[in-house]
Length: 276
Ligand SMILES: [Zn+2]
Image 1: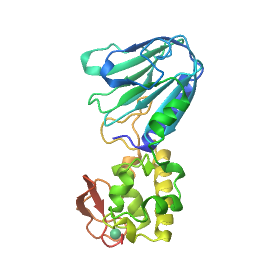
Image 2: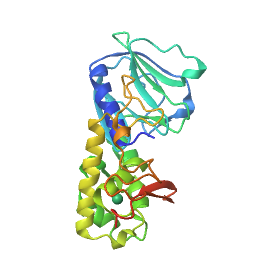
Image 3: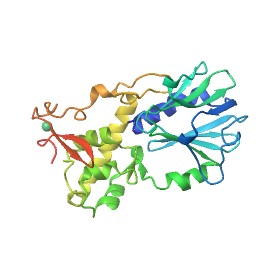
């Protein structure tokens, strides 16, 4: 599932392709992947027809594209969604799962495809409505997280620190891969109850989250299965995971066998020696 580094990589690779381009035509092939926020409809203007793309934004795992008519399209990649740029319009076979596309004035196209359909598109009349209706429920963005914010949000919680990190209302953008990697980098066991974590440890964890997400971003994100950037390129950071997907293998630091268990309903891997 794409997490913050993957979604930010999509934003960074897509933006230079689409910024300033006018949308000649837009097509929603599946209405059930699309929701409208108050003040928006499925009309041509809300789908950017005739408008030029003026900005892109991201909060956590959600991407927003703004047009010069003020309208905003927010895209969530879900499990398997891909937002790509193409020099040709897709052929639209059943197998391409291209649910929506935007034909741009240089004859290129922006295409949203999602085979498993856990992702989706939200149409919003403006950025303020998107921030109020959708982004207000998200916590601080993972690239900006700091220790005091974690301590204030979680200091009294009996939840495991792993489960808490997966909560998008606490830190937006961290999912299973980067939660495990951040906890390993911070030397904190994922099984710890949040209320046993000290202020100094929250600081260390926040710094680790920023570092791990930044490193993954430098590698273009992690491609495990479907993820591609806007140009169709795979990420490279999957080659550098220290613990994610390595349960039963040797810890890269101390050579102990990495533990694996289900926490927060997700497979969790950690080193019982390096993480306390
Ligand atoms: Zn270790």
